[in-house]
Image (cartoon, rainbow, N blue to C red; front, side, top):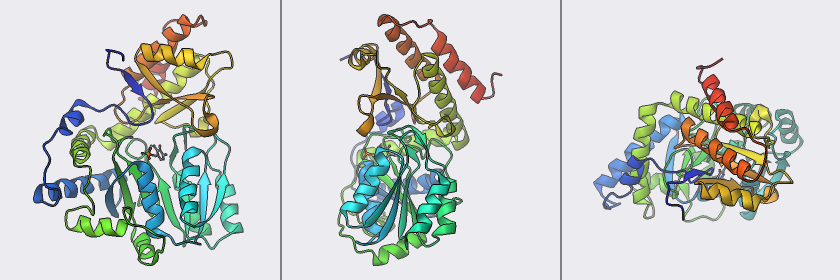
Length: 388
Ligand SMILES: *Cc1c(COP(=O)(O)O)cnc(C)c1O
């Protein structure tokens, strides 16, 4: 292992701020006692501000996928018609969960690297139904594309107004602009290890009154992931099963850091690091996967050139302390991804660019020292309104 603190640039888990790490060392408390009730009630009220919602927000001890599963089993019944809009591996996963539990899923897939097209979504909605729910991914981490959720939700509301809008916002909520209530989203799932700068282990789910009405008649089998049980417990300051208490202490500390920075500045910082990564990688000659009109500000994917030995390249990056992510699904071995969400600053991105430059120079490729660092910094400064 490297003796230097690595620059962990994967799209979650993110590195943790010191205050968050320290909060995780808190002594255990009785999860059926008053300290826990205060902790959970406080976290839920604060999460609502980041979700921009007056709806219930529930905390489920699980990976993000568990949160997605809870959203399927709590509101749907076998045979329900569901439109699964997918632009990558996570959209596919969400549709698959619904299929596994017996929903009648129609998948509407778009080319990887592209966002969902509103006109095609309207067409698909009009061609089928009646739709019980529409599944969509806010930020498709596998392709580094952010969907226009506001427009997608508006399309659902006009063509299939009775359909529940269920959003996987795991890798974007808390980092980039998002409005649960103003956009009319019924169920929104996020996960602790992404923008929230917390260890893996918690998933958050917001639930609209309309979704609770659906829950009352939903027949999919469920036990651990029953959100109605989570609601009943939350009202008593508890969770139905033993929660990841240490991660909740971490989340409490992370929310304090996020509140100190402020949501607008968090969004600006992510816009700046996103622009910086795209500019730096492009300067190094990499082709980006995402359609520039919908490029994600929390993760960037770049094609691995045919003449670049990925194993040698990645091994050298690791030695210099830069940890990046590979591709998923059909993109395995074809792209690499740089995560820039949560605990990330422009200087951390400049460090990543410097390591990429050095690695490519070591591999004998024609790279001008400082070129990617400069391009990244200029792009960040422009985004922040500090350069022309
Ligand atoms: C990370 C992620 C998930 C899955 O989260 P796990 O915690 O790995 O289960 C789902 N959707 C998106 C968009 C993600 O980025």
